[in-house]
Length: 268
Length: 247
Picture 1 (cartoon, rainbow over the protein chains, first blue to last red):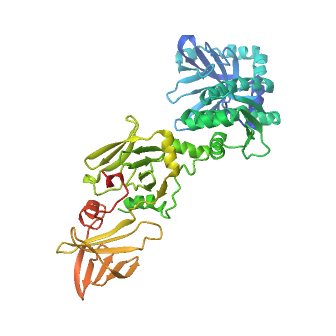
Picture 2 (picture 1 turned 180 degrees about the horizontal axis):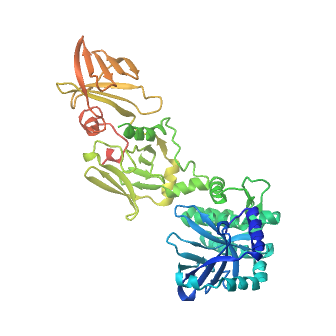
Picture 3 (picture 1 turned 90 degrees about the horizontal axis):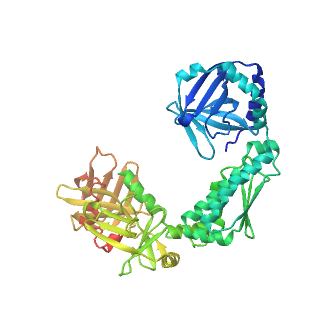
């Protein structure tokens, strides 16, 4: 998941609302396997990086919806353009253009669909129809963009459960894992994937169990539960209370996995 | 040359005081127990023990005392006595054995059972390498006599020099009466003469005995380690603390 500054999230929401009168400038069509297809229409002025996205024939969360998007150039070893949309108040990646010019769209789970640019199809796009589709789906799109903390928690718990199961299997444990993000304000919650901190911690525990027999036997003997809590300061806090590993983090805490690894090696 | 000796020195300096902290410490914390699990402990029927830890630091000795093995680099032990200076000790994952090579001789040591290995690592005494000296300078006169200087390896022993003089295979330790050492070079004064060792390579080092000067030619150390350790006679019979001492 992606952490994004609260200001950036607000900017995206405002940008979406401000498009009511903005005409589309041009469109690019990317075509993938099994009828999958993506239209990315640029909103004037192009320099602002605003776009309208329509993905079809995929398992993407934005499939079949004309969705406001933004493009962000990411400077890595191989620069790429990220295609962002607003989901539950958070900026989320719909896909990206790879170094070879292909468009990669994220599907469900870890799946991806690679699409290639098609000039002929791009020329056929009727911008007014695309804009009209967006207008007709606006309520649905805005509902998706609306912040929904409860839904986020449910989704996070589902993701966490997978990691807990993997950790239990590796460590021979039946860990009871509790995540309490309630002390976080909505703004803090938006910019912090709190559940991620817990997942990363458990993944580090799993790593230890998978690599060393003594880690597996020690952890299974000493840790019966994990409590991921919001800490009072940005300093990561780890404690072993009876058989419960308590992990306290805040939005400003550093690399929890490395810090926990160090703590476990020193304190178990 | 400096790089080679820096590597050897670094390896030695960390254990200079003799109180060696192996990675597994007292084997109490999880981190220490992981280090114990990571260490490969191999032994032979004669009681020789080789330990290779997670970061490839090696220890060699017996079941009660293990000394730090000085490595020439990541792949080789520092044991220039061997043919082609080929000395190595590795954990062979595919064979599940320690493999030792000393020149053309090779030996495989069986790994100890995990609990016995841990017990040994926690009970054995870990000490510095018996290889306590580092070559410092080697010179030769026109008649073929060598002038060899070594110094202490440990921290604080860098100025502890020894001077040996004589023909190949029969160099004798000289009784040093004074040492002058600065950025320009060194003068080693013995009962029989002075060895003026100059850092400036354009100037000739010399041996001065009863007023008579003999010009000396500097012999590169790193290209002549086998000569120094195996042929001069200075280190004959001395252990370097590698498995090759016994192979």
